[in-house]
Image (cartoon, rainbow, N blue to C red; front, side):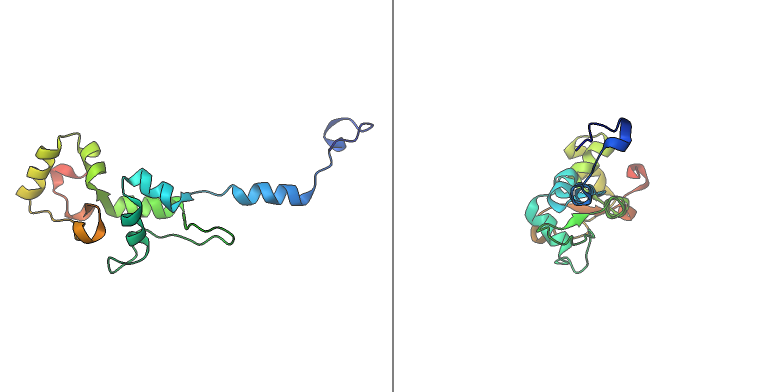
Length: 135
């Protein structure tokens, strides 16, 4: 609201509740489903990663009061990307065809970090990749 008789910024009246409502929504990061989409992982596979169904929590999330979906911080996403890579992302990073990438991985005996059938996605540890694929 603006006071008509007061010019400039001094004439603005702001309700603190309005400010709090707007600022509480703006936080760094993204919803877990958005993170799964960015990583090229399906919803079911993503939920297994954050629920320790692989034996460990692979993608850290935080719970936000009042929000139903977990939140992935930029730091958690960067940590995940530094340790793991999906097959889809590796194809893009390596700039090669699927058959060529599969051949290179097989030649270097690189196995997925988790059982793809159980997880629902193909995920590799970056540390296990051959030097030629360290991107």
